[in-house]
Amino acid sequence: MTPTQRFLHARDFLLQHRLDYETAYRDYRAPQLEDFNWALDYFDQMARDNHAPALWVVEEDGSEQKISFADMAARSCQVAEYLRLCGVNRGDRVLLMLPNRVELWEIMLAAIKLGAVLVPTTMLVSGADLQDRLERGRVRHVIAQASEAHKFAHMPGSFTRIAVGGKPEGWRAFDDCRDVLSVFVPQGETRATDPLLLYFTSGTTAKPKLVLHSHQSYPVGHLSTMYWIGLQAGDVHWNISSPGWAKHAWSCFFAPWNAGATIFVYNYERFSSKAALDTIVRCGVTSLCAPPTVWRMMIQEDLGAWKPPLRELVGAGEPLNPEVIEQVEQAWGIRIRDGFGQSESTAQIGNPPGQPIKPGSMGRPLPGYRVTLLDIDGQPAGEGEISLGLDPAPLGLMLCYEGDEEKTANAMRAGHYHTGDTATVDGDGYYFYVGRNDDVFKSSDYRISPFELESVLIEHDDVLEAAIVPSPDPLRLSVPKAFITLRQGVAPSGEVAASIFAFARARLAPYKRIRRIEFRELPKTISGKIRRVELRREEAGRGGAPAPDAGLEYREEDFAGS
Image (cartoon, rainbow, N blue to C red):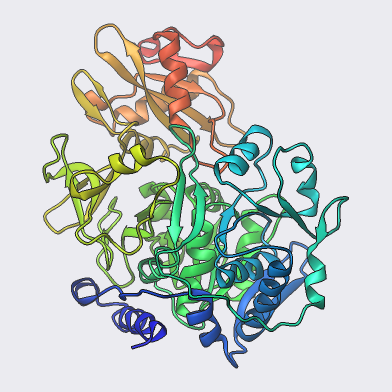
């Protein structure tokens, strides 16, 4: 079989067994590929004479663009030829800083065809963070939104500058590519293991790592993500995600196009649940993937007032709290299905469509992944670090941490890739998330999972977001402290704190009780994940002393008589 046929054989098997998890997991075999270029060998073949919409971008003012698969294939060939004329060659690093606009997808396909290495970068990055990406990413070319050109004005190094949406001084105009013939002839073969994507992780606990993916690990590996979401040809899939992060490539690029589905995008200045729900109904969105923050905003609305044509709902980025899942299911009769993966991989664990779902579980291993929980001694256990067997390594796993052999060797030690996340598994093979290894802590010699406590807090009517960290305590070593962001319109007060303490006390075992509460905005990474490490460091620095603003911190003993 040709590489294209091998890929399609694997994909079609998963589509055929979309609702038969046992067969899909047991019998799936990842395609064995030597030479493979996803954009040339799959996308262009699938797009030939295919006039179904590949990309549908809707703006807040109601304007929209629809690009067919056939047009996207032709336009990306034109862009590839233009980039070659600009000096972009196989193996060159290309930093891409764009919002969700049509050119983003054209450029990604074009870079794949060229064999260039993409360094997707969020538009929120600037200054030292941007310089770090340019230097550690060994970037030779920059393609950026014209409005962001000023960020590169004083950056050291020599790199090609191409602007989209304008022509700042000293930059080439991307629009010039429209004058180039849309005929592209690839130069040389693309090895399946050649580097393709370089992602900077979101850095919740440390400086961002550089995750290097190949022409097979993300393009082909995301067949597991396609299977988890449950995508099919003809679907209209909206993944609420910003460019620059791995999740955008997950289901704003590879997973839906692997299935032949339409990628849907709705651009907005500020997220509005009502506007999003209206758009889902008006545009016929059939599957939706959103981070927990968006889901928590959604349930503030009367969801039952909308009758969306949605078939699949999934959550990603961080684990979803049970309360959110229950409210959505009550309104629409559809359950949000959780899953687990990382920038370093595709979807590893998930609840695929049509399978029994256990409350609180992120699901079972997805096709192509062999998951083991390892204890502190590296032995299989019912609770431990989520680890992937490396004999053979799953196709969707990264090549390495770029420029850090020690970190790569540590993550790949003893025949397993170690995710750094802890979970439990039950007798039926369902996995339950506990937390990042760095986040789990001990109180009175009991192990505390921040996620478990946060899931309880988020059920309180006044709580929008919560983060649990250890607070130093002379008797118990540490006690659970909750940093809480209240819902709009709710002011911090002793009455609110007392209500939250009582609410949590009624739902948690005594050793898990939350002993301290501080009301504040939670620090987050630029990708929106809560930086518990920052809160933990701040709390440890106080040595258990109250917060400087006494009106924002409350302790359980303050309400001893209540």
